[in-house]
Image (cartoon, rainbow, N blue to C red; front, side):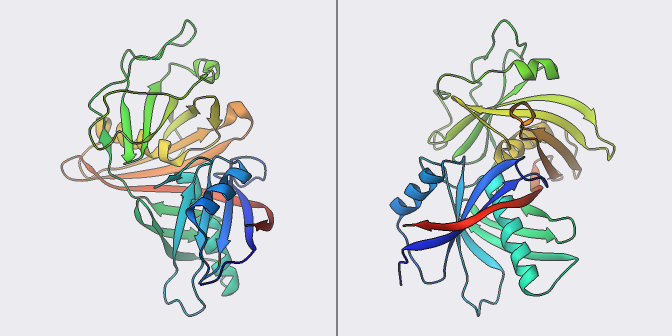
Length: 306
């Protein structure tokens, strides 16, 4: 095993087809046979200072399957799953695989090994969009958060606290209008909720605000959203979108139904993001599958020293 002094990287904007919109992501390529430490990964993620960075462990030249191990890091810690890193990395690596093989249209399939579990991927070459069957272990936390209200924003008295997988939890706050959504302000500190279910309390927690916009032209449920975590706002949050749509499907979906959602996030901060989610329901109205879909566009490339 070797340890080079520099690694190749790219940045992509995710959940958009336009550069400088969507949510930026750094993808650091780790060649086959190269090992870097957890501390080095964390240092690199902190240096990029984006909401997340991924470390793509590349396969050797004789690999039989398009399956890659991917590590996802915040600036402060590794996390088991996040939506925009999954979609962004999928768009990058599968587009590159198609280009290397001279495939110009159709669909190419692959997979990721994440800390949260395996993820099946499909990449539409002409549309430049990736679709991921995301790992999910949806839990509606038994304790409701205290209502988060001020004089300008009207919200429900109680709102759900939902984990899409262990380690990724969101407080779902429905507001009454786009005007109310615009008035949501950044908090001075991160959300702390006491009394989360045992075994699920070591988790990232964000506030996900949403307003219903009716049905789209394709009969999808249309939602406008914002994700706030302490003093920061995220332009696109696939894990939060998955938690919200899973929650709405459990409340409002029917047996064996497939529900489609179109979410627009990041408008208020000038980085519009478009997220598509399909939720497949079981016969008992539990969730069978969650599919997350979106585009990504490359912005930068270079080398990072380690």
